[in-house]
Structure formats: structure tokens, C-alpha cells
Amino acid sequence: MDYTGGFVLPFAIDYSTVVVGTGSVKSDSEDSGGATLRFVSSKSPEDVITVKVDSTSTPPESVSWDTYVVGTIFQYLPDMPESSSLDLTFSICGDVPLGSGLSSSASLEVAVARFVEEIIGENAFSSCPDAMSAKVRALRCQKAENDWAKSPCGIMDQYISSAGQEGSLLLIDCRSLEFQLVKMASKDEPVLVVCNSNVQHSIGSGEYPVRVSQCRVATEALQTVNPEISSLRDATIEDVDAAKDMMDAVSYKRAVHVVTENSRTLKALEALEAGHWDVVGQLMNGSHTSMRDDYEVSCEEIDILVDIAQGHPGVYGSRLTGGGFGGCTVTLVDKAHSAALMETLSDVYKAKTGKTCICFETKAAQGAHVLPIEMLDQ
Image (cartoon, rainbow, N blue to C red):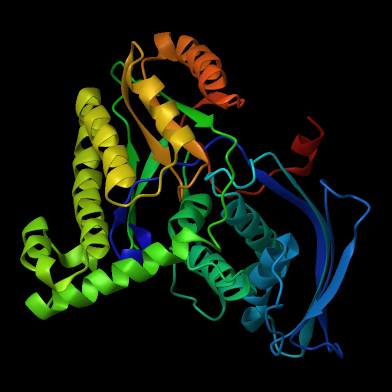
């Protein structure tokens, strides 16, 4: 759980956000320390956005998609050379489904950040020269979403978008912000099927901030029993049970989920590397049950998709992915059964809900990187 300082194990999917444009760093500019931005989205190409931002700029009252862009670029202004300004003209396109739990906002932020870094060049991390760029990029994009988009998200989405590597999952320690690449054992390697319920969510409003607050309440209760617990990451299930009378029933359930989810994540790391797919599947199923019952972030449509997948031949495990309240499921399945699973998910989900789901097979893909311009013509 990223916002409780715990462990997470995400992977990047083979969908992306691309930023194409030009830019320059202008010396001795009257807009010193600021940036002039002209950008457009392929979803509304007629709507060109022009904005200036500097160190005094503040987040807008109303959040829209361009807030994520401006908020991200704002994080790079301290790295501008003295007496200079940034001039950027760019367009944005992508195929990450919006509001689906597949980190579309993080993908946008990290793509914009990587573009800005190319323009600024060696100065892109001048304010933190000893820091690892992938980690700093993720932190800046998280801050943009926290401060500008008013979403209390953790760092997981930005980190995997920033540091993901093809063929590897990423175990992130959300306290130390260190990570390690986790490769799945190659023997009889299964595939991952992602299924979009087409039930959209918004993590900047509604129940997500409520969960953040409930975890904070649970942590404070645990500290009355054990002052050395600084976050739910430090607690065991025995600690949670010992502090049960100090919490309301809801906070107790939230604590149970977070503590057991950290345990499942670390066990999944070992199982993935060893190729123990049955164990990985059991942990995925247990995770979904806990998210449904203890964390209460699932919904009827997601539960239907998970139930369909868990009962299908060749499936090891299935669970909700993302912030919850809609979005997607991820299923670990034998390659030979992948196509049949996706067909079954589509047909049965439609029959049960009247909604259409979109499924695709994926493996861990590359995170943020620079593309040669000629590749964009392909």
C-alpha cells in the first residue's frame, strides 16, 4: 500500500502516453524562472491550450486534464538555469483508458516530465544531483497530482510509469522509495489478462481520500498500543488485533487489509521468482477478497469479472487492480487458455450486467523512455 509506506508490486502494461513537441531554454529572458506552454491533446485537437507558469503560480480551483500537465512542468522550474525561461510547444496522445484503474493520470504526468527533461537536458535534476532520476521523476509527478490535481495518491503509479522495465515487475518499498526489478520465472510462464469493466472511477474524489483518512485513524490507534508503529507498514496482524478496541469497526477492517496486503506482496515476490504460479494465484485471490470485504473498494461489476476468471480453466488467480470502485481486473492465466478466458469474460459479463468489457493480454512493458522520431511514423 503506497500511501501507508508499505510494499507494492506493480508492472507497466503495453499501453502508453506519448508527448511530441519542441522546446528551448531561453537565456536572459524577461520570463526568467518561468515557462510558456502551448499544447494540445489528440482527443480535442482544436483546443490549443496556452498558459504561462512560474514559481508564484498556484493550482486552479477546478481540476481538468491540463492541470496534470501544468502541475508537472511546475515541478521542474527550480532546475531552470538562472535568468532563463522555458518555451514548450507539444501535443499529447495516448491509448491508456481513462478512469479505468490503469494509471492514466500518472502516465500523462510521467510522459510530460520525460519530455521536459529532454528539453532542459543536464539541468533537469540540478536541484537534486545525487538522486536517481526515475525516483525523483516519480516524486515530482506525485507532487503534481497531490498539490495540483488535489488527489491524495501514493507514489506507486508514478513510480512504475517512471522506472518500469520490460519483462519485470517492480517491488517498491514506499517508505524508503527504493525498488527492485522482479522477473517472473521463465519456466511455463503464464500471461496476464487485463479486463476493463468500463465502470469509471476518479481517485481525486469520493472514497479514495476516505480510505487514506481511515488508514491514518487506524495508525493513530495502533500507536497507543505500540508507539514504535509509525505507519501501518510497521504493524503485524497481532498488533491490529491488540488495538481493535481502540478503533471503530471500519478502521479495524482497513488496518487488517493493509497489513495482510503487505504480507501477500512480499510472499508474491518470492513465488513469482520461483515460478510457483499456484501460490501467486492464491495470493491474488486473497488480495481481491480482502479488497472486497475489508477495504471495500470493489464493486458488483468487478466482482463478477473476478468470479468469472477464478472459475475458468487455466486461471491461477484474479483480482481488482487500481484504486477500485470500478476500473479493471488482472488475471494470471496459462497462455493456452488466455484467448478462451477473454472470450468468456466478454460474453458472460455482457449477459450478467448488460455492459461491454474490454480484455487484452499483456506482459510487463517498458516505462518512460525516449522514442526516435521516426518510430512515431510507424
